[in-house]
Image (cartoon, rainbow, N blue to C red; front, top):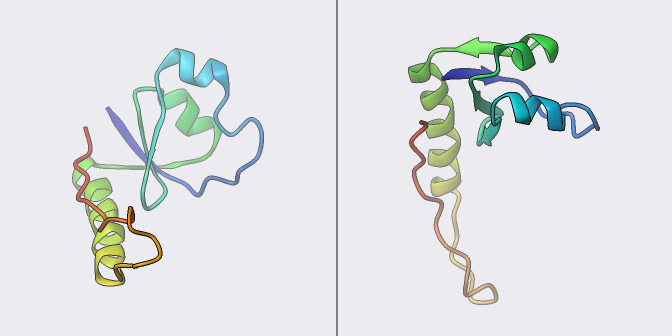
Length: 87
């Protein structure tokens, strides 16, 4: 697996059907993307990270969300953010 960090610009073509067909591209909190498609990472100029570096980024975002989580009586289905372990 390759781990990349890049802000998703939300524009068409950032992740194409062909990119995903080559190897699935999964997005995680902290602008972390996991894929075996190194060509996609190069095409979008993503910064490659080690798994440990990428996991630390995800953990930091989740920890911040947990620290700021406030239960809501008006949103009963709203739950505290859960830890995520990258593949």
